[in-house]
Image 1 (cartoon, rainbow, N blue to C red):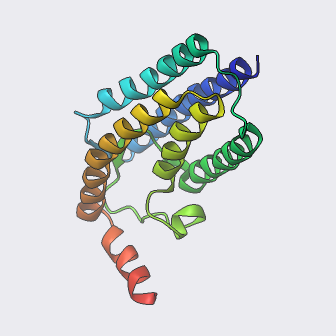
Image 2 (cartoon, rainbow, N blue to C red):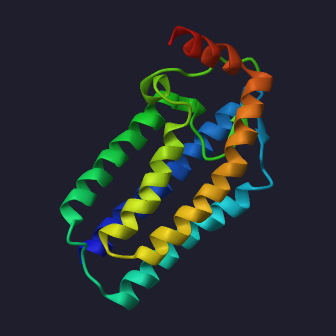
Length: 180
């Protein structure tokens, strides 16, 4: 029962994020933004949908119940959700599920982006690991962690190059490195 409750809440959260992303995309495009990495985006969406399908199948068929460490994993999962919200709020209208680049925009360096370049990707990595292991769905956790790492190994370089080429990204993060 708790699996279905948490799963429903996470799926509703993702659907809300799709609405936010679409609204932000519309605004960004109206400001002159363009998309990079569009060719891999459908694969990323497919991976995330497949993650939920595999999770459901594994939890239902294995019927292993909650992890003995469920309370710890659940607290970590809640903390990751708080970080996710902090990421979205910090980027504001620049947050999106696509790589949308607004030429000459000032790079956001507040919230978790003050401390790391891609905290939202860290959130996704942790979710893909934590959600399955809370319910002992280790196959899903392992396979989708590997798939996500593969996806990010394509996505992050595309995003970084686009940001370097069209914004003050290099200057902002070069200063941060020099200040350390």
